[in-house]
Amino acid sequence: METKCNFLVDSEIWPNLIFKINEKKIPLALINGRITSKTYKKWMFFPKTARKIFKLFDLCLVSNAETKNYLKDLDAKNIFFYGNIKLVSTIDKNKISNRNEEILLKNKFWLAASTHKGEDKMFLDTHLKLKNEYNDIITIIAPRHIDRSQEIKTLSENYNLNTQILNENETISKNKEIVILNSFGILHNYFKYAKSVFIGKSTLKKLRDVGGQNPIDAARLGCKIYHGPYVYNFKEIYELLEKNNVSKKINNFNELSSNLIKDLKYSQKEGNKISSLINNLGQKILTDTMKKINYFLLNEIK
Image (cartoon, rainbow, N blue to C red; front, side):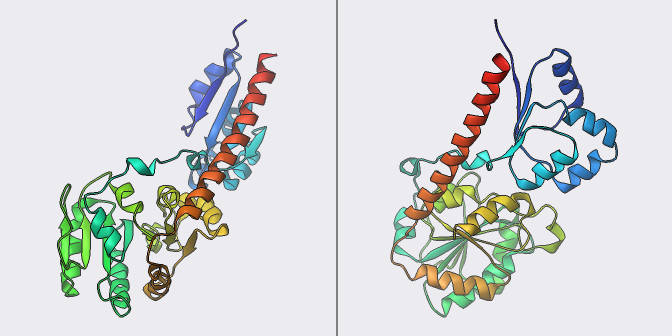
């Protein structure tokens, strides 16, 4: 006899779909579920309906502790938190190439990734502090929205810094101090060689309720991670990374520059320990998650 199960993975909650699944008496599981405080408040405008919906899940595997608490209040059952399955995937470093590899290996540099408007001044101030220690330091800025590249270049030149907007398939020019990445999908190409990365969308108070960008790939590629105080979107992941000495919260450019000075003193990138740690954490999350899913399936088939 064939037994079906439905899994919602990283998915929005569609009430009609859930009620239809229940009508057909098909077991339903939520995998890597996440409910933010904003979403929870919306559900609580209709608390009876919300509890009626979430009661129908037979298994809830959540991506953070906050969601676990919200689901308990919404009368969901069989709620478990093992970690975010986004930590599970791996990256093959051997498949990552960069036409600027020689420059990145030869020179001291650091990377400010996924930056947002209002954050770039901090990175330029950091660069000036670093120049006191390393005269040939290169700061690479990867804006979240590349239409800001010229804006960042203008700001950088106001600091009298030799600046280049680096388009796809271009080479970093000699004696450039600030390099602004002006293409999509290339962060891995720089994470591979960077010792230290600052992840943006984390310093602006106005974005505190939506702050934070995903630091996992940078950590998986062996980078020490820095971020500002506003990382709500990836709070649990940053807490996990901080607990394992992979990430650190930074409040201003003085703190950032003093940490980068320490990181940059090493002649080569020493990120293998970080990569191994992230891969081991991901493997444990995968193992625990699959055990629970297999147990769920076996019991539903009986």
